[in-house]
Length: 327
Image 1 (cartoon, one colour):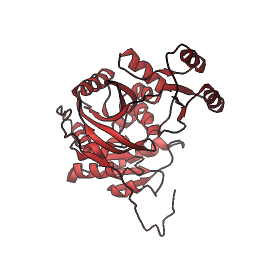
Image 2 (cartoon, one colour):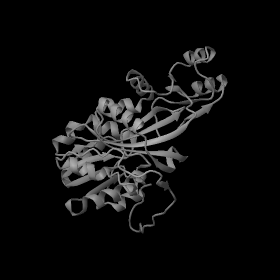
Image 3 (spheres, rainbow, N blue to C red):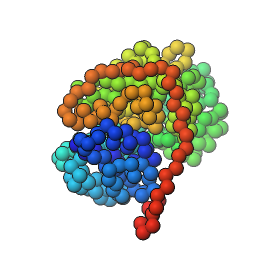
Image 4 (spheres, one colour):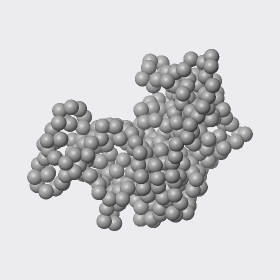
């Protein structure tokens, strides 16, 4: 059984985890558009590929799947997830299963306002959102929301172009500068992250790991501590199963006054997943079992509390003599 990890970038740990779990049963193949992506050198084989926006990119990936007899494929970057979900049948036709949720669900995850509407429809607490700045300003005047608020792209990731604003003048400036913005209520509470796995065969939520976020950097969790709450587990399980998610997803949550509010949902491994793996929440093993046709048992909350994760910097040094460097 061979697995393909697309756009591996700097996610060395994820590649290492899959190599460990697959052992001598298969190979881990990685791709990236740069040969300075350190994670690719942890894989059994590496392919330098075009950027995902270039014509013919999909054909290159499908050719790799055929050549390497890839059983399952997933990506570690947001822009590629919609492609995998949309072209699912093309991957299945070459014997490769995309490890990703349904296309419309993936698109909903990347459209923050659509996700807001979905959560509200499901009666799951979430922060107020506005597309129309005039409607937002009327809500401020009516006392329905107050500053500060976040102004962010409707579609976006890695905290790019997110601004915390304190008045209407800033709102006007940002709406003049950028298109497709939304205004989101500032959630002034404790932030949590949940690493969740939904079995690709049964559709059951089998794993939930929750971490209390202590420090963030560039939109990713830098320091965190493992946390448990059955009420939160039940809310997450209901949400992911009713929506029909599959595979691994990452959820941002806020707790304010004893109430949990779901915020953003990312249908991929989150940047803080190494914390979950270190605590025994083994999603690579769950994926490998699913690809082998086996369902996973439900192990929600099967980890210890108060285990801390602390990220730190590391470097990779490689001799590139005789090789063209593709940054």
